[in-house]
Structure formats: C-alpha cells, structure tokens
Image (cartoon, rainbow, N blue to C red; front, side, top):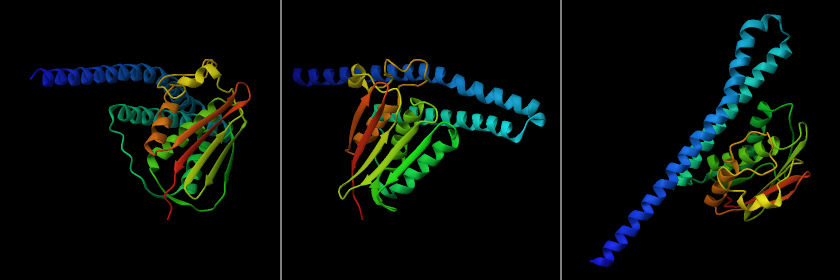
Length: 249
C-alpha cells in the first residue's frame, strides 16, 4: 500500500533526523567537555606536585589552600560528568522521573553545604525557609541537579564575596525555590535562548562554562511539570524562581 510505504518512509526520515541531532549533540559535548576538563585537571596536577615537593616548608593554611583547590576541581569535574549524563539521557528521551518522599529543607541545606565546602571564600549564602521540616514528593536526583546548577551559576557570575540569596517557600500546593544574585545579569537579547544547550550569554567574557547548566535545569523543571521564571538586569543581578507542584503528606 502506497500510503503505508509513505508513512514508513516519513518515520524513517524522522528517526534519521533525530539520530543526526543526537550525533551532533554528542560531538559538541565531547568538544566542550575536552575544553572544560583541562583547567581543573591542570589545577589538580599543579597543586598535588606543589604539595609533594614543598608542603614540609608550608604553613597549615597554605596546605589547606591547595587541598581546597584540589577538592574544588574534583567537584567541578564530577558536576561536569553528571551534567553530560543527564543531558544525554534527556535528549535521548530516557531521563526518568522518580518522585519519592523527601525532606526538601534538608536536601536544600545539603546542596548549600556542599557548595560552601568547595567555595568557602567566594560566597556568602543566605538560605531562608518558612518551615523547619517539609515532606514532599519530588525527584531527589533531578532536584539536586537543578539546585546545584542554579546556585553554581549564581556563584560563578557574581563578584567574590557577594551574597547569594536562596529562599524556599512551601505553599499548600507548590514548592517555590528562589535564587537571587548580584552578578553580571543577563542581557535581554540572550533571554530567548537562555535554556538552549551550549548557549551562553554575550556578556560572560572569560568566565568559564559549558552552556549546559540552564538547559539541564529546564529539563528537570519540565519533568516535574513545574515552571521557571527569570528576572534580570545587566550589572545588577539575576533572580531565578522555580515553582514545582507539591504532593504533601
């Protein structure tokens, strides 16, 4: 039957187009990751060599400084691998949504503490919540990925020592996460493509990055059937507000 054959051909062409898109994405990922890996690997190697040869002459503070550099670089590499795996699954349509009952306040504290461990001298977090304990059904891994990327961006694009405000608001039917920084801001012309993979704002300058973080955030929000809003002024800062439906007990 001619119509069946045409439909089969159309489906094959669609599958081929999707395959080409995924191959192009993977090539771009390899290129970006190869570039992004160099700096933290160089940092780890140089700090390890300096510790090996000169630590016996250093103060404890100087030793800890280099150990923190190594820890920060390892954290960066781990996050990079995690981002790539999540994006690859999302683009292939295999990223799963597995909500479980969790204490969202404890999870937020955990994410903040982990980031403070690797950037202690760079950031002052101000974490505000309405309750001391809140159980909700959310996907823990996706939520961690989403918050880590939003908070990491707030740190990265803010001046050293600048505060990042992180508010958690638990309403009856939804959970709201608001992250506000006093960083470089996002130009209006970049906002339309803000959540595209590999897109970076035109004012980032020499600040390193893959352009994957916000694309991953959007996919995590979408899997929760949530919403994300952005307010930003160049030179003054950016506020991201994520609203996720709440199933409470």
